[in-house]
Amino acid sequence: MNEFFEFFSFADANVRYVTLGSVLLAGSSAVVGCFTLLRKRALVGDAVAHAVLPGVCLAFILSGTKNPFILLLGAFITGWISLLTIDFITSRSRIKEDTAIGLVLSVFFGIGILLLTAIQHSGNAAQSGLDKFLFGKAASLVGEDLIAFSLVAVLLLVATLLFYKELTLLCFDQAYAKTIGYPVRALELLLTTLTVFAVVVGIQAVGVVLMAAMLITPAAAARFWTDRLSLMLVLAALIGAFSGVAGAYVSYTAPAMPTGPWIVLIVSMIAILSFAFAPGKGWVSRLLRQRRNKTLILEENLLKLLYQLGEQRQGTLAPHTFQEILERRAIPKKQAAAGLRKLKNQGYLMKTPEGWLLTGQGQRRGERVVRLHRLWELYLTQYLHLASDHVHEDAETIEHIITPELEQKLMEELGFPVLDPHSARIP
Image (cartoon, rainbow, N blue to C red; front, side, top):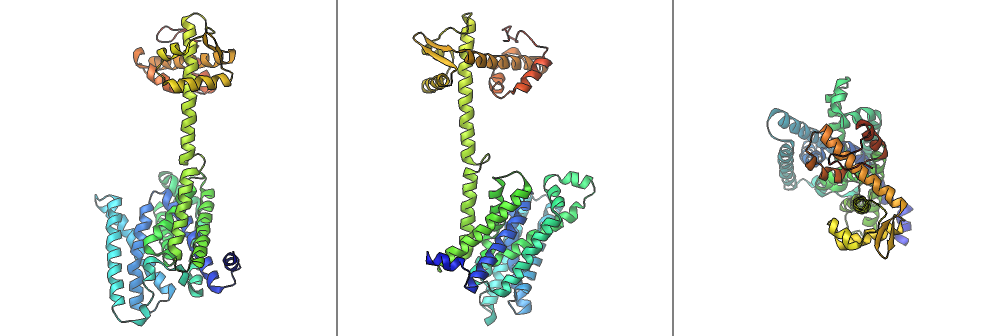
């Protein structure tokens, strides 16, 4: 507990530098990553992250210094060239974008490794620590680094705010943006530049190998929680910032643990939890929705079946045995028993010594399902000209999702019909 208070008191200058630097790096790259993700160019971030390494090495070779501004300038230039190379290959050849990304990534990264190895064997004492760009070393951030990364992070956020509307249109409807006169190519170059800046800012914290995760993972996690881009940007920034603080804290409590990989691990855990539990889009939510739909279909099929059995006996309120229900429709015995019990508890059925009986409420619901089934069969035969013996399966599916408004529209469109294609009465 003492470590917790020591860390969050920020009394140690190194703790302040590492924590603030990690928050700025993770938060700003996450915001730009949202647009990269929405443009379905997530792999581009990985290619750029690997392509900045030769730029860092060349900047050091030419300048002989590890000044962060000079190294970042070199990283920016080669990162930007890598994106232009990808665009050039895909536009001037038949090579697909994923292949071009793979080519650029491997070639630029290979050159970077060669240059880094040459620097390490050059005997230049100033090269010490240059390899931190490969795997990242957030714990080594100092005040000078923090100033450089803060300026770039602020630049990214300001540019995103200034061109928010244009970038949004570029992501969702590029053709419309071009039609109304937006400079689409310039906007693409702007987004490319912002992506390169975001990668360049983050490599010192997590390295070129893990930078793609910092760019895309917070955005992917935020995408599961909302469909609004403005909220997605805020959530992605918060997820990235929280991961930065948490990664710095874990690294502080366990000095042998590197900060960058912990940041990536934490943001990945948040993403996995979002994929699983986010309302509406998460795995758990989808499974629950599928289960509810399955239960609804079972219940409506049972009510429809009992109504149809009643029609055959000239009385929908006649009781029917469990065996009779199973013989009429192929429903697993356990599911049928569970469905009947649930309908009884909901007041749609009654259990009598002679069998299962529709209540008034159950009769009305069963009647509606039968009506929707027969209306849809009639619609398919009249408007799509399907044979009457080919419409049953489609009607079995669609009858459970037709809303009252669509039901009324169907009735009006079909002229309030009395009989379905099989000459059965439409209730």
